[in-house]
Image (cartoon, rainbow, N blue to C red; front, top):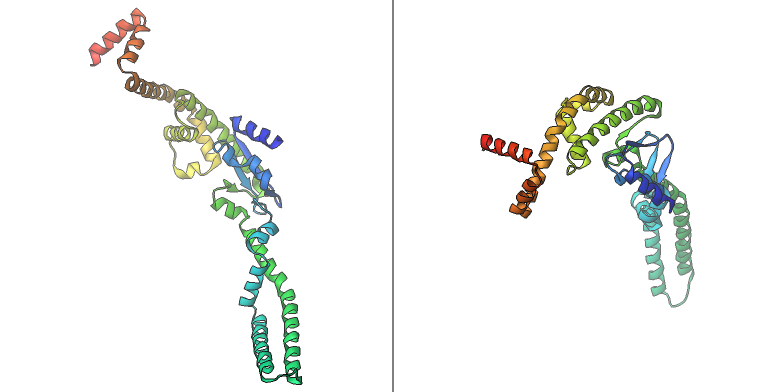
Length: 284
């Protein structure tokens, strides 16, 4: 219930949001869903310390689903030479016991001996399994844990960057400052042309401001670039608004034809009609 309230608030919030996983922290399951960047992709960004972990399931839960005991046993028999040897001996003992039973009508010392050997091998195999399985389980847990590391999360696009705790204060100062300036400019472009989504508005701002890739790769340099070109973006807003008006007019004209043109002209004052007539005579 309360998690949904948080999600609703994050969807409606229109300022930069940074989610940071500090050292030795773990973000799992339902807690992840509440703060996931996909709730509001443009405004929410996730970051993590190299020692943090994140994923839907705990490591042991994933092992219990993806690598159960039967899978551990299969791996152990494939890799452990002692188990392989014991299994071959057990197969040989079973075959010898079957041969002894076929060759004798009554239970003799030979069949009893092969049965005893078989039971002894079964106990040895069981003891060996109990000894090596914890090691294979630990290896599986380490492998699963690699899927929850910040490096893996970044490669999958789940987090924006890996930020060591020791340098996080300076990093987030410039990161948040850059994002606040960018959001302020993007909102102006969005107001001028509501048909653009947030990312399209961001690209429009970057196109107006310019700057090389290495500049945008640094929060500090990008912040300086944006702050020094705010007026340039402001000066571009009338042209962006004009584009929006023209696209809207084209759409309405396509849908309603002459009715839209007639309605538009009827709503003009006499002064505006005279100015429009003069403009048409001069330009068409």
